[in-house]
Amino acid sequence: MGGCIAHAESEEQQPVEEVVMTSYSLSVDTDDFAGHHREFHKHFELKGILYTGRFEQIRLAEQAKTGATVLVRIVDLRSEVSLGVEILDSERLRWANRPSRVLPMLAGSLHCTQLLGTFLDGCFFYRVMESCPRTLQHTLSGLGDVQEHHYISLFRSMFNAVAFMHSKGVVHRNIRPEHIVMAGPDGFEVKLSTFDWAGVRDRAVFPDNWKLRGKVNWPAYMSPEMLWNMVPDFSTDIWSLGTLAYVLLLGDFPYQPKTNPRSKNPEARVTSQSLREAIRHAHPQPTFEPSRRIACKSMARVSSSARMFLKQVLVWEACQRPTAAETLGLEWFQVELTPCEDLSSLKPALEAAKRIGAFRPQRSAEPCKKDIEPILQRCQARDRAVRQTKRADRISLEDTIGSEFKALKMIRRLSSLSSATGSPTGQDADQLGSPSSYDGVPPSGQEH
Image (cartoon, rainbow, N blue to C red; front, side, top):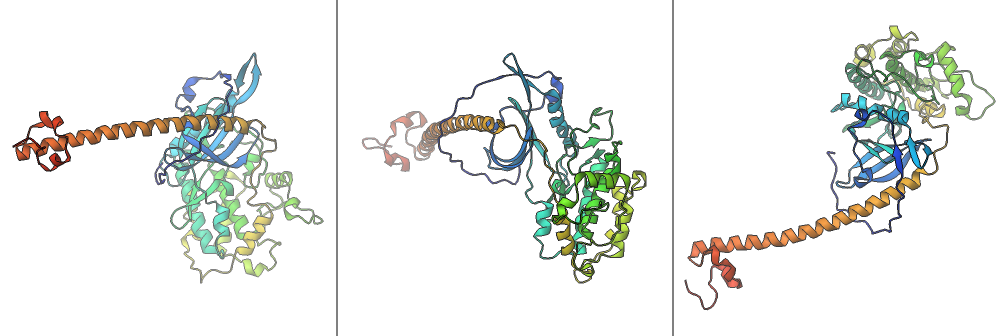
């Protein structure tokens, strides 16, 4: 894991709680999971929790050897217990392993977060990913002002990332703000992440990869064809990026459902169901005008080429949308606006987008299993003790080898000095014990 700084590890010895070993049964084709490693906790130390679902956690972790920070998705595979043997959910394992089959097709790309490894350890599946802590929302919020030239640069990078992904035959199908992370020296290089819903167009390679599993809790960025349970193609990613561009530039979703004016909470006015129906039935139609939630609309004007761009990518019929490569050739991306040439500040539109839930994270509707965390803590404590024992043994061995190496080095030096001065040869070097012999001076009582 390049680019990480090694550090000296120093951990306090802690009492290790005994872990009751459980038998696990998994009835699946072992060829599907032959590449998984074991003993995750011997290689990584779990850190903060970023997300918790019913059967999963997303956490930061630190590599024990180098101190590298990585992102780990942990999936609890337990299904039921029968006759003292805990049965693991093979279908859940297939779903958890799905990105691991897609991501190698994108290996080495600067546009996608990289898969670093997978572990199948006990009742948990671990997927270790490159960590990119800078999110799209943090990047935009950190700008003193947001103007159109920022978005031109940002979306050019986004469509480059999608064009590369599509060239490999991969469709993301769940592009949303929290699945876009930022990298690069200027912080405006886009990386796509979270490929849980990704599919490969060549279904002869992965026959079951097109099936989706799970309920969509916030459908704001989903295409009409996905909400109608049709087979999504590359054009579904174009729709998602078009929706994101619309809400950032204008402060509203393109298909904004009617809201309850009596509600004081702007986010509560738009429900998941109302948003879903508005997209499915294309009503009410997009206005391509700044949101009415922006106090002064004259302060949120966008260029005519930006409006045309939105109209070209937000076509309800999937077959009429441009490809990612074609989108990069649209007029909006050919215009290089400088800060002085921008029409106005788009910060009010960004704030309006936040209020309606544009950056709303996708949450699980079901509570997490309560015993996931205690099990992870016990496994981590157990393997931390193993690492500390191995480290102590390694240090002791290094000290022993170091002492022997120093002695051997001293003998070789004495041998070379003896050859240079005519003193006894290497076979008598064991007799040269006094410090004076190190400078070619024979010990007392001996002559050249």
